[in-house]
Amino acid sequence: MRFSTFVAALLPVGAVFAETWNVTVGGNNTLTFNPTSVNATNGDTIAFTFVSKNHTVTQSSFASPCTNLTTTAGETILDSGFQFIQPDATSFPVYSFNMANATTPLWFYCRQANHCQQGMVFAVNPTAAKSFAAFQAAAMNSSSTSAPASSGGAPSTTPSASGSGTAPPATTSNAAGVIKAGSAAGLLLTGAGLVAGLVL
Ligand SMILES: *[C@@H]1O[C@H](CO)[C@@H](O)[C@H](O)[C@H]1NC(C)=O
Ligand SMILES: *[C@@H]1O[C@H](CO)[C@@H](O)[C@H](O)[C@H]1NC(C)=O
Ligand SMILES: *[C@@H]1O[C@H](CO)[C@@H](O)[C@H](O)[C@H]1NC(C)=O
Ligand SMILES: *[C@@H]1O[C@H](CO)[C@@H](O)[C@H](O)[C@H]1NC(C)=O
Ligand SMILES: *[C@@H]1O[C@H](CO)[C@@H](O)[C@H](O)[C@H]1NC(C)=O
Ligand SMILES: *[C@@H]1O[C@H](CO)[C@@H](O)[C@H](O)[C@H]1NC(C)=O
Ligand SMILES: *[C@@H]1O[C@H](CO)[C@@H](O)[C@H](O)[C@H]1NC(C)=O
Ligand SMILES: [Cu+2]
Image 1 (cartoon, rainbow, N blue to C red):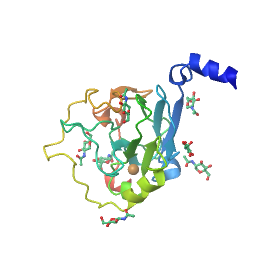
Image 2: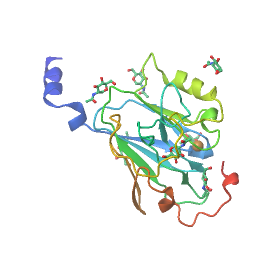
Image 3: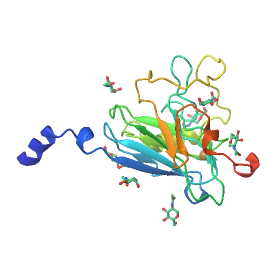
Image 4: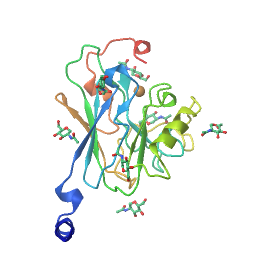
């Protein structure tokens, strides 16, 4: 007991034991994040691997599960962009971000039409008071026409700076290269040609 307390004091968990939490998006062609939540500490990486259909992982809030969380400038904070996966794909894009403040739960949804209302949501560090189950229930009870939470200007296409305070800028990467949060998902989707309606 004393020994482990002593070691823990010397070795900040986030700095020394940083982990990567792997989340599969659309596994088995389902509208799911698997696992549906993770418990992360400062410095951990959350990595989302998109394996089917055409999903996003997009930051929202506990109060409004199916609506972009935006900065005061109206920019969405964390968003992978749409990741379209060919049914016969053999490599899969990964979107990841680092946990900057593990004491603040983070909430996410998929922006594809009505996926959130079908429960396609994800949480980092949910609490007893703000549980994943309550978040998902609220998502499934959301209106399907989710309006932006901000005052209504056109969505910004400028990549977000780190201004939010909830998480640092994110990157997306796979063998094909690296893109930043907010840049065009099309970089990872060259050659995609299916009709969008087939994959919703
Ligand atoms: C996530 O995947 C990476 C790369 O495959 C692996 O090194 C790491 O151990 C995985 N993390 C977990 C929590 O399974
Ligand atoms: C896919 O289904 C298999 C068999 O039911 C299961 O073991 C696996 O965890 C599922 N994968 C995902 C990402 O849901
Ligand atoms: C996260 O931690 C809470 C306790 O703080 C626990 O109840 C929950 O099962 C954990 N969730 C995961 C996905 O490990
Ligand atoms: C982390 O989040 C908590 C709760 O929201 C907040 O009180 C605290 O100031 C934040 N810490 C940092 C370093 O941003
Ligand atoms: C579902 O939405 C309705 C209408 O917005 C609201 O009155 C009700 O409290 C919600 N139920 C739950 C479980 O969130
Ligand atoms: C949510 O954020 C994304 C990424 O910035 C943006 O493309 C999309 O238009 C936003 N959705 C709404 C309803 O504002
Ligand atoms: C993915 O979904 C988005 C939003 O519905 C759509 O605009 C885009 O065309 C889709 N991509 C493909 C390759 O079908
Ligand atoms: Cu989706």
